Length: 359
Image 1 (cartoon, rainbow, N blue to C red):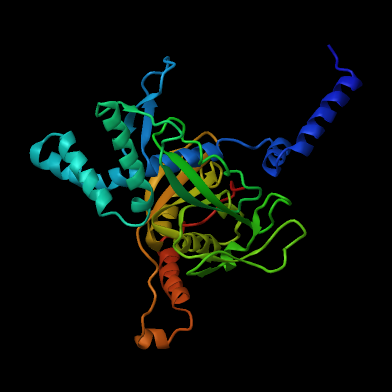
Image 2 (cartoon, rainbow, N blue to C red; image 1 turned 120 degrees about the vertical axis):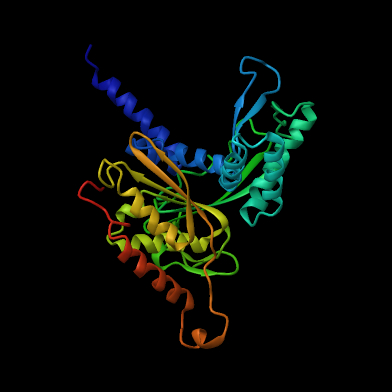
């Protein structure tokens, strides 16, 4: 039947009251209706990259969850790929589990930055839980009180209202906890969200901590002056690149992500399916340009409305250490960027390009 004005009014009042008592993230989600899988797709990719994937073995049990590792962390499996292929080419069969386990341990022990900070502790926690349960697999998930805590530093660029906050802290059923520290920035943040105002393309980098302006950008928003270089495990560019008007700006945004990330850190680029032709051929030249900066493609996930590309940082930004090069340059990092960027955009004319179907 038809709804009365009183019913509509009561429902509107309830919604208004809920919005008034909710967080800026919840308010924005309620008003736009676009809080879709762009959060889940990134969180899952980050967890798979650093920690691997697991499944619950005893789903119908009321006892402590028992897990089975289904995939190694992507950061490890990428490095194992050549060893697996070499072994198969020589012996005509898959690499034995015991040899693969030894290689995993070697990769972790010799790993840099993110591998040492994230994957190594997580891997050790999984193995410890496995030993305590008395079997190699499945793994008894540790209780929250005894689980080790792994710290994850996340930079969300073009954040608007901080949609990723809280979601990295919930790796349900794992034998460790994740404590995520977020720095969220946007050119024009959602008021009262706690997101910092910053022009990402003009952002400065320094060796030490975050630097904020002494005066707020607005009454409820602070501005970011500089970020610590090589200090984040994850940088997220969600729908951000398609709002930049030129190829050079989009590549600059990725270069700044390279500067912000630790070695082996993960750049997550979320785009709409309509950013380029439906064939998806735009992905290849984009990937070539981004890899040319010092990244390696790690994951590609395609959903009904969004595409996620993740890139592992494989190279540090070089700086001049004395000599003629240093004497001839006022900004060696800028020189390096331009020397890298111009050939990339010339070699891949479709790289970082948008099309008529874009946002």
